[in-house]
Image (tube, rainbow, N blue to C red; front, side, top):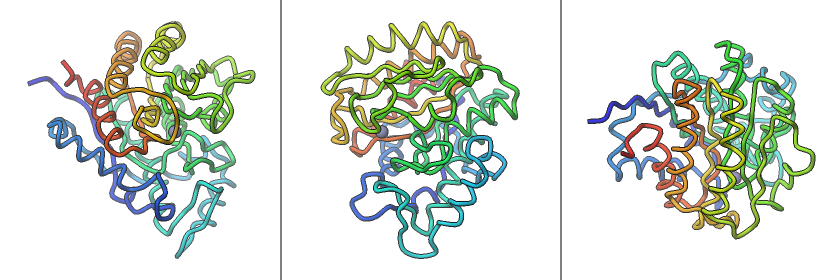
Length: 312
Ligand SMILES: [Zn+2]
C-alpha cells in the first residue's frame, strides 16, 4: 500500500450556498467530486478535515476590513442578494465563504509544518476572481490569496507559488499579488474571454499564458513546459498553491478549451516535481471552477490522485 499523506478539507456549509436555480456554480459540484472519490477508490486513503471559519484577521491580510465588513453587512437573512450579475449570496453564503477561506488556512497549517505533504480543499464559493475590494465572477473572498498570505505572515515563508489552470484568468489573485516579491503566479487561461484581463502589461511576478479558443492538450502542455516550469524552477517556491479550476475541460461548456482528464494528472505531476525539488513536496490545492459535473469529478480525482502519490 502506498504511503499517503494527503488531507481533504471540506465542510457541509459549502453545500448550502446557492446563487439561484440553474446557476452553474452549484452545490452538486462538491457531490460530483465526492462521488468520484468513492468510485475511484481513492477517497479512503485521504484524511478528512472540517474547514474552520476564517477569522477577520486572516481575511484582512488580503481584503481591507471595510470590504470584509461590507460582505458581512450585505449577507441576507432570507432570499438572495446579488453582488454582481453572476455572484449572489443566500442566507448560508457568508458561512460558506468563511469556510472556504478557512479551509485555505487549515490546509496551510497542515502542510507547511509537514503534518501532511499535500491538501486538497473541496470548497465553494471559489475565490480567484475576488479582488482586494470587489467580489466578482462567483467569488467572494480570494481563498488562495488567504492561503498564500497565511503561509508568509504566519509561517514565515518567503516564496510561495500560485498555479492557476482554471480556464478563466485569476484577475483577483493578480490584483492582490502584483509585484509582491513573496509570490510568483503562473497561469493559463482562454483569451480573449472573461474577465478579459491578464495579457496587457502583467506584473513582473505573473507568468500569464493566454490560450486561444479551441486549444487543447498540446498547447496547454507546451505553455507549462516552456513558460511555467522554468519560471518556477528559477523562483524555487517553498510552498505551491493550486488554484484548481477544471473548466478548461473539453466537456465543460463554460468555455472553449479542450483539456482532457489526463491533462490534469500530467500538470499536477509536473508541478509536483517542482514542489519536490524546492518545497519538500508541500502542495495546497483549492477548488476554483469546473461546471460539467462528471468531468469535474473525474478531473479533480486525477489531480488528487497525483497529489497523494496514488497514480503509480
Ligand atoms: Zn473558471
